[in-house]
Length: 597
Image (cartoon, rainbow, N blue to C red; front, top):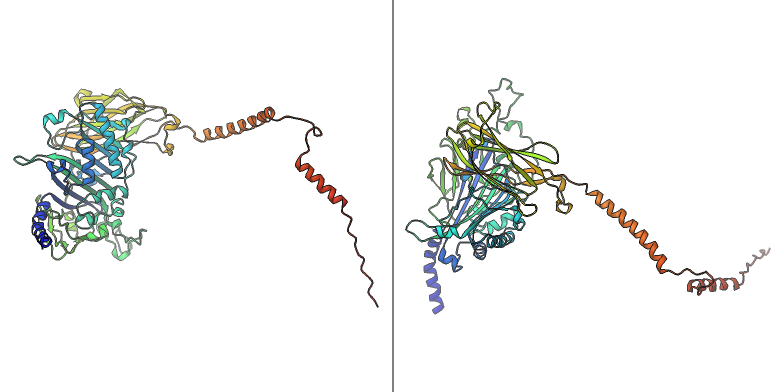
């Protein structure tokens, strides 16, 4: 009877627990069609837990595996990024989340650690990187002191920290540009979600689709939040952004080889003067084709997560109001908070899909997608020079807006790139006539410089610049460097491929805070012929073996006459066989008798 009462009490309080838990977790998928038959899918998951529960290890919706690591390493705030591909700002516009949830190519990580000295911070940083390496199946344990820097201007805490807390914390940043992000990094990411990949928007996450994207970034952010008049809590945000090619995603999984479109399905540009019944200029790749959720992600969405906040719509799509969007029966459509998106409240027990129709008329061709927002800054970086001894780096920074942009430019370079700081210079040109560059004093463009030189095999180079670019201008930032010669044991197995140089981090200070990364670089160093050491080793080993063998025989063996030494057992055995053979009588051959007549 007492057991039955306990079960009844549990059933009565379960709904209240579920409502309380739902307010601490929410998830949302935002879809935005892009030019050239692409679509941006942004997955956002957020979980909260009070600091009291966190300290007592009552994690509830907060992932326990991550929380215990943060407690053991004394981490106040953590930011982790897994990124592949390149964001095409010229065609896709501004970055999602204003670039704050994006990292450089490979794995990027920075954190604020409780430490009163740099030595203590280094020890906790080592503990944190090794623990996260095992949790996310990544090579974070290779972020050693040569790949770690302490930014001064670039990164600021996103959480709420008191002045006393910040005085006893240290900021460390590390990056692995050569890390290959794959499915084994996605699996731990999904396992940290309350509903895993069984329900909600997490059921759409498939490694085949994610890593086939033109651009993808996975982000994890942990920070303390203290709302005014409320208790502080610890917040963890998990974000996945991917740009999918619609035409490639719509291919069936059993037929991955691209095949030409049938003639009857081609959409031709009839405005071309050479258009006829036999000549067609396809325009499918210029507009936004029709697609649905199951085609893009390979599966429909499996209901909603029961632990998510029911007041937050799980799915939103940003399309013009003139475009038709069809959803599964039972879902409710409402206007998004930004006024440009439509959000959907779903039936938690049924699968959900979303379908967009294709506009064929020319007068509505410009209304198929929401025009992407122009970014505040364009950034490109490349190597200059030639030869195996010296080189240079050129960063092209373009301000297309009508107002001045101030930002921090951070580079974390390997120790074998020895830069010459006195060669740092800037050249300015207007965006309308980039061919006429004019030299401008560095003091007009570069406001502050922080430079921490590298130490061979101990630490890398850290360069931070505070730059200011006038409106409608382009700045060419250049400097020279010298290539160091490595020991042959320091080369990777694919030495002739080159060494990856981490992307530069740009933090826009004004007019508003934004982040962006340049592409990573591939540095070629003087590489020895690794076949020669093997040839030398083989030749030397052969010569030593012959010389040592002959000298050993001379020193150890004793030379005597053949008749002086004791008879060899083999020789005696041969003599016995010979004598036995000689004593054996010859076999008589019987002549055949003549046949009787």
